[in-house]
Image 1 (cartoon, rainbow, N blue to C red):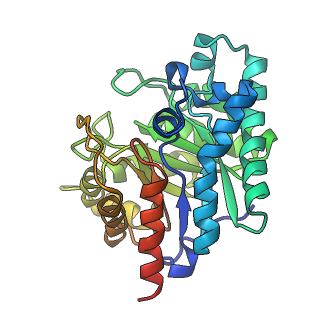
Image 2: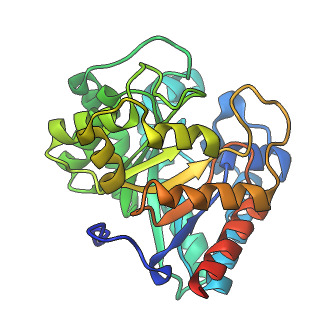
Length: 315
């Protein structure tokens, strides 16, 4: 496990792809029913585990074919105490789920492409759904998330990925839990149609707040669960301070974005347009090196990203 070098913008040889929107892909491509949108429940059956492996397969093959590194996040976005209890899981059963998810993700990638450079991220999702006006302090979030973080670490993930964070407090807590467990962490913020976090903070402000609280422990930051146009607003940060602008330029290391705008129930952008729009964000976040998808994206969107990265490498 090594820290990513984000001291200089990446060259074409240092790009990576990530997988897509796992829950929507499992539903739409693979016909899986996910109670409470919880992909981790598939770990309980042979059929479910096969579906998870089939979900990951095209991303492994794309990375191997295109000579790219690969980031795969575990199917554990909902595998935290509140959602686990709602689905009937004890704390001990949830620990086992997180450990098994880590092992399945790595074993599947190694079986398909043993020489591939794969980073397995232990996905830790938010406690509350988007739109629920509840937040936690950093102390509360650390206590809430520490058990999942430790279980994922025990399962062998390379790092924790705090996904779809809507405020700095919860992100601070997860980063602190990762530090206590001795494992790396990346924080991924979700932004709304206005390019701001749910609590109204700018992206740069949220990054600064997490870095200040944790002595910049995170390897870096992603933006996810937003359309590329919305992510662009977040990166441009109208009326932001110079410190906030610098935080975005220096600390954003990747994107996992939605095919559609917030409120758009259609299929969203075609894969080629989506890929061009996501890669164009490098102009605003020059140290971004990993590109993948979130809601409404699947293998065709990531294939289009891989093609764009291949063309970039030939320039």
